[in-house]
Amino acid sequence: MTVTDLTYREKEVLKFIIENFVKSALPVGSRNVSKQTELNLSPASIRNIMSDLEEMELISTPHTSAGRIPTDKGYRFYVDSLMKDEKLSEEEKKYLNTLFNDSENIGYDNTKVFSEISLILGKISHQLTIVTQPFLNDGVLESIELVSLSSSKILVVLNISGGFVKTVIMEIDIEVSRRKLVAFGLYLNEKLSGLSLKVIKETFIERVKDSATIDSNLIQMFINSKDKIYGDTDADNKIFVGGRGEIILQPEFDDPASFKKIVDIAEDRNLVVHVLNNSGIKDNTVMVKIGEEIREGKLKDYSLIVSSYKMGDVSGNVGIIGPKRINYAKMITLLKYTSQLLSEIKT
Image (cartoon, rainbow, N blue to C red; front, side, top):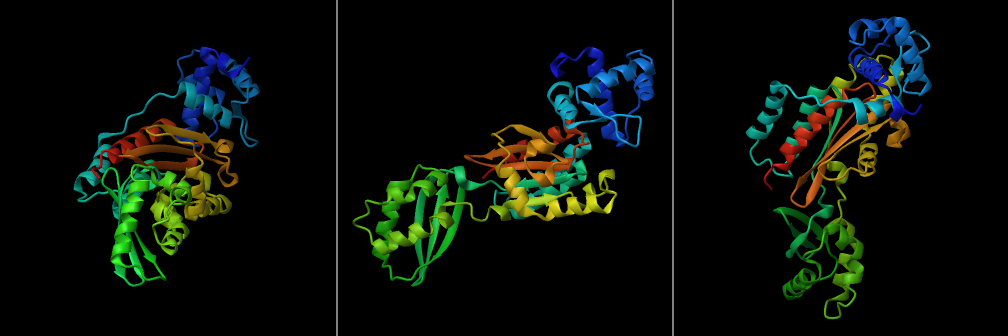
């Protein structure tokens, strides 16, 4: 028998085991299943069903207990086929809504607000929470302005669709007249307007190779600085992590080794950036990865849930990292709701 061929009774037993293990963190025994479900089956019959589920690797037996706990495969089947939606409480919604309603100038670059969101999500979820500001890679360049600040500095202003603005100060080691700077700005606008920053960064050299009328030294400086100007070089500074104080109260982290692991994960910004960049999340969706599915050794004992939000042409992520024993339905609803609020921010 394959997982897709599970009987009604097998599905109900698996669902009960997972949902009760999520609540209690304790292995679930056949007597509890028999008493607390409406299957009207004896503990002996439940044990037979459990044996079948264990044979299909959906549950397992811990060494220290006669009860059962879910496996990664069991959690995956539950999320894909058995889980029902769970609503946020009105109090939880109000908690989030108040932040958005009370925050003035809650623009995409308001780091304080994004930090607050991560902390509130941590308090609601009791898990490690991740919130990113929008990454501008997919933003479309509307215009570029070059402003001389001094004989050694140029301010580069990128006006991006949706009202986003990125500024970069460039150090220069050549003298550039105002006339040359204006001409170069017009040239760049002609070549680059209407393209995403990601495309510009990847093709910049090719697009400016016919710049015979532009100072070659100026062109070379912009080529050397293309990653700084058009890339998200400060991506790790756009990530905010909350829930540190909440997740360590979970029973999974009672022993010192597990406690240290989750603390290290919470402090490892490079790991968080790597996981989000490789999550494969698509716009306006929620993705759930369990254990080995994350493909990151440090997270093999955890689950990752990520949602995306959009502000104009650019997007960001809201995520949760927690033990596999997590309320998937509630976390998915929480991330969807938060992403919706973020998507409604006026840029």
